[in-house]
Length: 251
Image 1 (cartoon, rainbow, N blue to C red):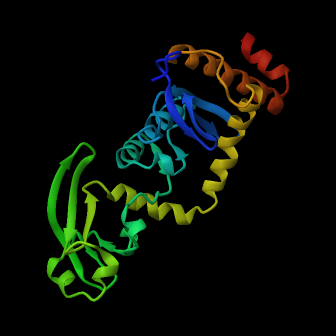
Image 2: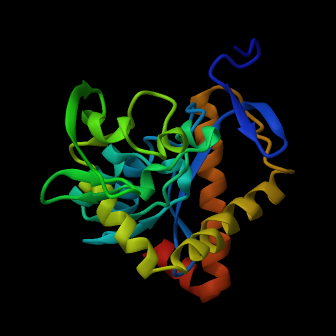
């Protein structure tokens, strides 16, 4: 808790942890204009994709848009909400499983069959639905095959338990669809970096390496809104000249 600004939070950056806020922007990749912006106290980006993407679509008055984000925005509920609201999401899957550090087979090596709702392990055995859990993110199903794991010679490489379990949310089909879209558009993630990082780099340069001048969430949001407006105005002048924005403002 910051004693000088109770609304701020400890935010991780490339240079270490700092007390501050999380600024979010959605950028129109055609002109590098900021289509939507917001300031949050969230210390992570999880759960913010649908908010920004849907607001950007409405601000652009577009029926459908594509939203490309980095791994920090990967969340089933957000991806599902985007698809329902006319937004086609592209978010690469992060590797968060603790099993990666232990060295067993990762979930991606287990092939899912939607027809039978089963997973095929690297040895070809079928893992069937066994356990069900109702969680805030939705219904989660665990697939397992105890008998196959007991006699499997690769069990020590796969799990430290008596058998391997693979978890899957009931609505995880939306993530499967997104995973199929990404390889078909390999350059789209590079385009996101070129579009989204450009305004952030420019704004941080203006602000002296990205330090807000105000305190408390409402004031910081107002400051960032004005900064985003100034960026868009300068960007518009670079794109169409001075006369067009003046004519539009006086109309």
